[in-house]
Length: 395
Image 1 (cartoon, one colour):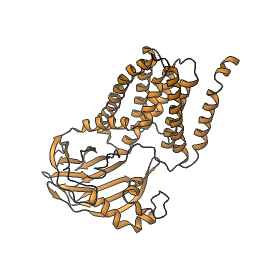
Image 2 (cartoon, helix red, strand yellow):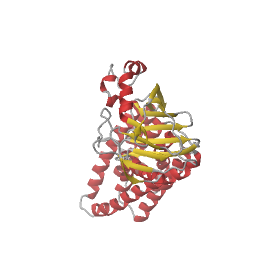
Image 3 (cartoon, one colour):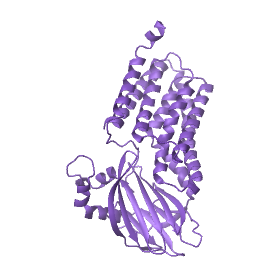
Image 4 (cartoon, helix red, strand yellow):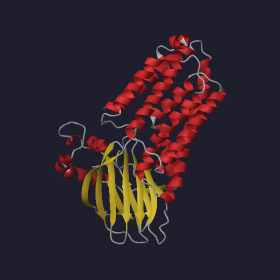
């Protein structure tokens, strides 16, 4: 027993330090955003009298788009700042979004703006009304926010109720127009069109897009899942830390399988509303999981049963994956298809990454100084995970 603690004398202090940061920080309010990309939420309600659109955008994006609005420079959008800059906010929304009937742009009336909170993140919801749409009309909803900013992985998640029938849409990348034909049975056409490349950031008049391609709603959720894992750098770093230490193919298979099963379980349970944990706690534990696994790579002489700790941490990672779908509030009748395709997108990217990594790692393990490379690489992973852990708890 003494020999065991002697060999792991550095592992346990590091583990204790990470745990201390985790549990002390949970009680401290956080202002930091843990999301890797900017997400907005659009709710469209169409009946025989009028069309209501509620556009909800995170306040950090608003502060980025209108820097002067933050008069006291505290990186928080306050009610007084909204009231003072209401005209600028209305211009931002009206220039960034358009709702067309066919090729005719409709004029909105902005009814209200108010701050709302989703999980641990603040948003500004803008309530707008447009003229009514009738059966036979074609709806074109266009979002031009961050269109030319390649550094921002912006996504607009749409839920619509058209004469009582529900449909969803996802706008991301170059696909920024959601098109639906209003008819008697409200069968969603699912057409996605690419905006004209001349369209600029909000602030410049948007030209009418030309229809380029068709994409079914299920494929939009597949792509959303792929984007979610590709921009989820913490999840990817956790996966790298799991694979970085040399193991048998059977062990690797057990690790990947347990991670897949675990996060699929909690992703589904969370989106269905059966399991809920505070977002800040989930994001902090995800960061802690990176530190823990990387520390094992450094200090553990032998790695055994890693699939079990992977499964436990995978349950938490699944809750992180679920956040974006929970906030979208998809109707239960459409939830199964959306959930399946979103998870399929995650798994497709994850499997591709594993298949690329394993041959590279096999080559690495043959090198003379492979153990040092793994050790120094794991130190870097611990450091990055610790930075994220601190940010998500204290900032």
